[in-house]
Image 1 (tube, rainbow, N blue to C red):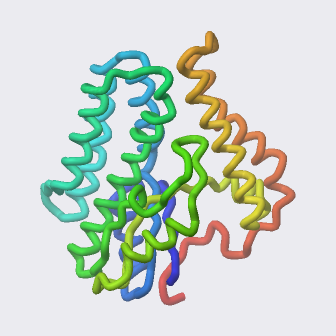
Image 2: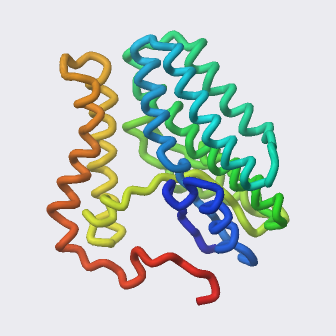
Length: 261
């Protein structure tokens, strides 16, 4: 089975989603991994920040803007105003979390992970629905039910053996050959790892630690929340400065993939 990974920038608008559809057209035995569309992850981090500080009105306004952004993409893809029930339900679940949960600082990692994950859930739902709409039969996979971890949230390690069985059960005997699931990508981690899997793994661990530090310190630190939120991005810039000239970049890197060429 082949795996195609699409970052958020590549599906930031309807044109990008249509390009994805063209790339995967005619493929079989394919797993498509997609990040949140555009800057949705950043917007969801702001939702979490408002939730941390009890600003429900601001959190709901941010969610409203996120929903409007995705609605515009959906309408352009279908060529008319279209409501996707599954997407509407996801935004409803997000609002319920913000409005109904009694937030405790000890649960920061739980709610950060829960809220930010909606970006990928929404993007993959839209893409899966659109692919089916244009005749590319596929099945949407909820990766939260297929990847089993031995711990939770920022300290989680994937149980490969157990997850393998779950993922296999989700894709076998389904009658389709294309699957759509959620994922994250960090080009800085790839550069840090010199475009090698082992190095990229170390890079992801570094950036994951920085993100976790942001969540933990953000609840009680006297340091400005805005400065703390900058930590992962500052580290990313430093890594790019130190390593970008020392990595051997693959020849096809940065070149748009055009099917049939």
